[in-house]
Picture 1 (tube, rainbow, N blue to C red):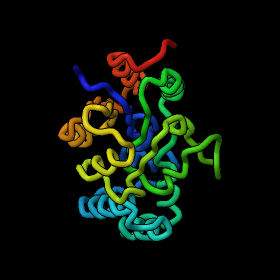
Picture 2: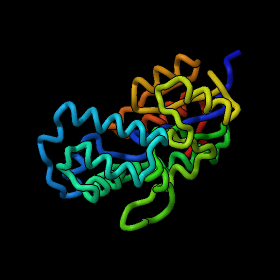
Picture 3: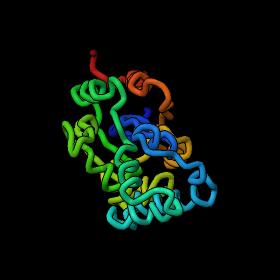
Length: 221
């Protein structure tokens, strides 16, 4: 008999929350001048390395912003990189909140988040606005909320999935996982999780709904 799904786990960015995918996108969204030199490979790598430290909790926010400005060779000031960082996450995907409400109401499995994120973005889970920035309430519908900067590990490191399993009390095929990055999905599948890769460029709620319905995990709308 197949193992029943006992936990439905979601990534945040690219599944529930929209975020910019490049420095140029964030600049355009905030009206910040874009400098071509910031795309130099060595500067891109410096920012990626710094971001990994940040989303695994190894560098605090107050240290991250000046370090990020330095990682642009000071093409951008600390205040500018803070603005870009805050604007990086900007809206929930259409229909996702209502879908999660249906999922929770159906009560056919527990729910969770497993997200590569940082303290600044994680603090935006809430209702309404704060300091002119939107807060995101849909994730609050989910029970077990786990973040990379708190766990000190990041996807696709297999260790984060094992720590997550230990904390939620479910493992392997008991977990249905939604993520928009193929490498994160591949790592979860290696541990026996059931997975659905989400295309962040399309309607994510429709994709999630289709997968949930295939497992009979939703109530009727």
